[in-house]
Length: 527
Length: 93
Image (tube, rainbow over the protein chains, first blue to last red):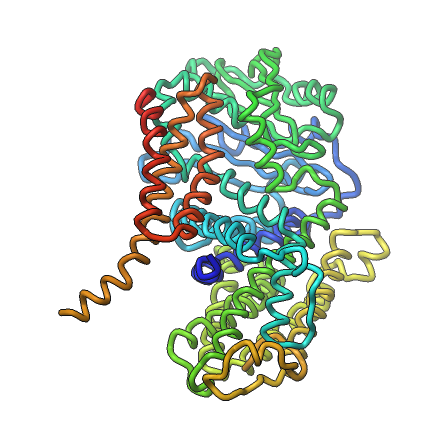
């Protein structure tokens, strides 16, 4: 069982580490998106959702006439732009059949801001990666999550003395400290790690386990009934071909506001807008509701008449809604959100310490520590690039957001390319330098990039820290302070790694003896 | 030749267990997700219940495969659970 835990953990550990870390920062993806679009004004309060919906709907009618369907996400306390997604009319086979954009709630126009994917990049990367078909990425993520679930369960079985371990911590004892840290981090966050891994699988379960659906749901009507349990998507019927403008979207959203509160509306979806057969769905937002199950009002598009109220789904669908919501944490207020972030960061550290422990443990068993075998080298180098290197690459992504010229063609994608170029460079660096030096250098580089990010922000935008403080702009204040906190964390890790003296011991001594011997200094890795 | 046979004998059970865990476990989970449809509940609810439960079945199957004493027992255990599930799934497929 212990071997199962080790091998399952290591095999997909690197993938899991990247998923965990990018997923962790995704709890602040909306704030990150705001920071990455510094041209958009500070949002002092949530604008009236009904007016915003009308404004953006008018813009969409002009921008994508004849679109069979569009959907827009209204601004809330954390969002100062409106994200819209639409299908394009009469797209030829092989052509992109859809489009998306961000709109300014104040004007309804496309946001006049630098092109960026914003925090959505880390969010999407976290479950589907990049540079590969989305479905492949999601399968890899699912396999990694399944391995994680097995690693968690087998981990609990392996550590029989789990609560004793939790209260045991031995500083500065090399492998023993790593194991203690790994155990403490794992046990502390155990309910969260188990929850987040399982619910992660649930978010994409239709992809991973389609068999029940294939066996049980066969007709179009059944499929429609099934989908209605999962999302506020209204099935577009056939267009009548008769032109008719949409009724007031503002009134429809007002209706929903009376039901769910002024800021309680999440999305507005229209099918066949401009046609006499148009339908509009106004769906409830995720805030303050621990379920993602759909709640929506369905209106006749041309008259604005309320056709149906959907506010309940079956027990299994509601369970799924809760599991989904637990994973995304969108229901949470800012305190809960910070807790999510911190426990998730502990989860990242759990995967990280587990990965490092593999090399620490094996180094002591090497016949000649000066010349380890190839497999050991590979794991060691991949650890450097996937742990320290990822920090560097993520910081570089934010630097690219501030440094790439606004006129650059395909700018949003170049931000992403920068992330991967830098990440590849950290792998090269990790391969070329001695392991310990590579760790220290990359950790220092990450610390420097993070520490200087607020300086870069002050130099390149109109929103330096002193102004953010004066204006009470908590998104930008929080971002600057968070960068410094993370820079400090990386600096501490760099110093500890540098000071660490790997303990050398003759080969073929029983492992147990050395485990109990005090090692000088501490930890991060033996180099 | 003997060394090849010896190697198969030593690595074989492990490979067999890994296959049982990866593919046997998935097959069992998939089977369970379909078998749920035989329960007296509406089809959409049963489909969702099956999908949600399948990952727990998968995890449990993998743990089982590596916890028991031999690869043979691992496979036997999977088959014993699969048999009634197959019957239930048969009725709805």
